[in-house]
Length: 216
Image (cartoon, rainbow, N blue to C red; front, side, top):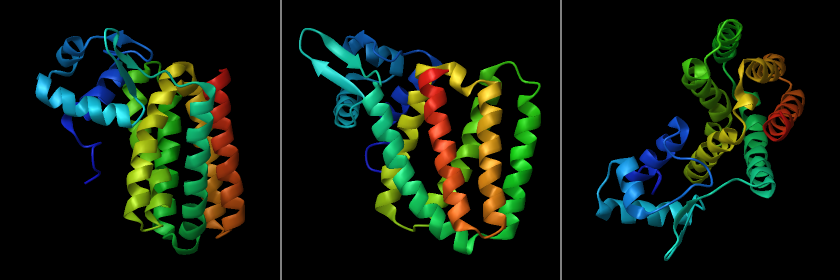
């Protein structure tokens, strides 16, 4: 279990941001947040402590609770740490990857690209995309076989998802197809057992996602 981030109040907070019940940068009182999250005051205090420790909220007397709004530095730092961890994991993963995993991953990517070509409602493909990306990028992290890194990465994954709320167009069909194309380039390199090309392709992908989030 990942300490803290499995707390019901923490998970409800993340879900409320994703569904739009809460907004990045929003200011509200503790009671109002309890009502949105559907939890009582006692677990809300626990959740507040966890969320503040993660930098997701700021609590100030007489002001209330301010939900974080990712600035450029926060976004850049998050991508930097993600890149460091994933490159290390991918280098190891490239030496042991099962060809069957590559075939399955490629088929999943082709299927989602075909689906995105006809989709016009982000809500309809948000979860399939998230699951695919979690399997793709998460496989690199799992190759490191390090529980502490797993915990750090899960926190990063949640923050990455929230960062995309800054600019929903960045995860629209056109940009999502571009991301999947970049994934396929990584898969092609893995199929050749070319770890260097795979990490270069991953770097290009992460820089591309960062650019799309900040400029689209």
